[in-house]
Image 1 (spheres, helix red, strand yellow):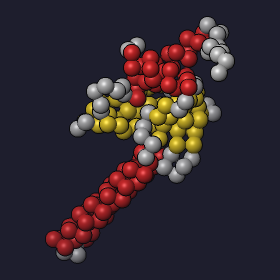
Image 2 (image 1 turned 180 degrees about the vertical axis):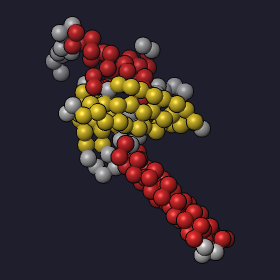
Image 3 (image 1 turned 45 degrees about the vertical axis):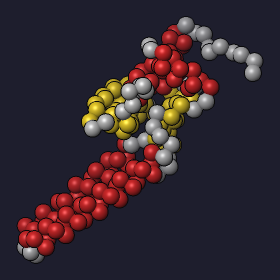
Length: 171
C-alpha cells in the first residue's frame, strides 16, 4: 500500500472521505439533460430529413429510447460515494442513501477512457447485492476509487480477524 493510500485510510477514520466530488449528482443531472437535448435534436433532424415516413419515425423513436435507457441506468446505479470509518455511504440521484460496511464491497472493474476513470463494483445491503458505478477524473497523484476501497476493505478485514478494535485515543 502506497503513501497516498495510507493517508486516505487515515482521513477516512477522522472524517468523511469522498470518492466522488461533492457536486457529482448535480453534474450527472446536467449531463442527462444535455443527453436528452442532443437526442431530441437528432430525432427532429431525422424526421425533417427523411419526412414523416414510418421508418423515419421509428428511427427517431429509437434515438429517444436509447438515451432514456441510459438515463434510467445512471439514476439507478450511479452513486455519490463517501467513506467514514468502516462505513460506505452511497447517495443516489433521488437522494436515497444506502449505508453499508466497507467489507461488503467486491468485484471491482476499472477502466480509463479520455481522462475519466470508470469504476464498477458490487456491494451488499441487507443480503441483497447491488451494483454501483463511479465516474471520476484521472489525476496522476491520486488513486482510483478501486485502490482506496480495496485498501480500506483489507484494513478492516484484518482488524476483525485480529479481534482488535481501532486505537482509542483521548481527543
